[in-house]
Image (cartoon, rainbow, N blue to C red; front, top):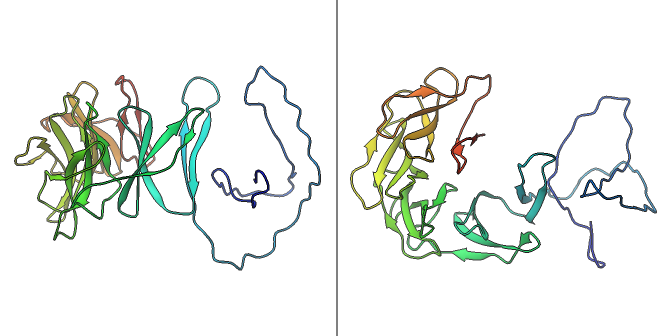
Length: 278
C-alpha cells in the first residue's frame, strides 16, 4: 500500500499458503460493517509472476490486537516495522502496550481511533539484556522483568516501577524467567533452569528465598488463577507437553488439556473462565 505518494510498503501480516492447481487468482474486499454496502473501483490491475528475489530479505514484526467477541474477529495493526520484537503486554491502564526488542523494553501508546503512537523507551535501570517475559503488577505500579543483573550471564527476575526506573532483583539463580503475579500482588511465579532441571518457583515480592513447586518433567509458563488458588503451567510429565494446574503451594497437580498438540504458556482470562495458550 502507499498513501499520498509515499513508496509502496508492506502492511499487515504475511501468510504463506500452498495451492494445488487448478485455482483462481483475483481481488476481493469486504465492508468493515456488515450493515453497509461499499462501492470499490479497481483500475490498472495486473497479475504478474514476480522476478526472483535478489535483494537481502528484511524481517518485519507486526503488532496486532484482536477482538474475540462473538462474530468475526477484528484485527487492528498497531505497528509494523523492519525489526524483530516480541512479547506484547497490556499496560495496567490499557492505554498502551509494552514490547521487548533487542533486550530493551518500549511502551507504545494506543491512539483513538485505535493505532500505535510514537514509542517510548522504558528503562530497567542496571538490569540489561532483557528477555521477553514481563508483566505488570495487579495494582499497575510495578513491572516484573527477566533481565541480567550486573556481572551475570543469564536472566533473573527483577521489578521496576511501571514507568521505568531502578531495578530490584528478586531471584539469584540465573537462568530465571518471570511468568506471573499473584492476584494480591504479593507473590511472583517464575521458571528457573537450575542444575539441568526446568521447574516452577514462587518468590515473595518483598524478597526472600524462592520455593520450588515442581520436581517432575520439564515445567514452564506458570500463571496464577484469577482467585489465586491455582497455578496453571505447561509440563511434559505425562509424555507430551500439556497444560496442568496445581494449588498455589505446589500440591494437587492435575492435567487440564488432553490433546495431540504441544501446549505451552497458559494465560487466564480476568474473569477466570478461559485460558489462552500457544
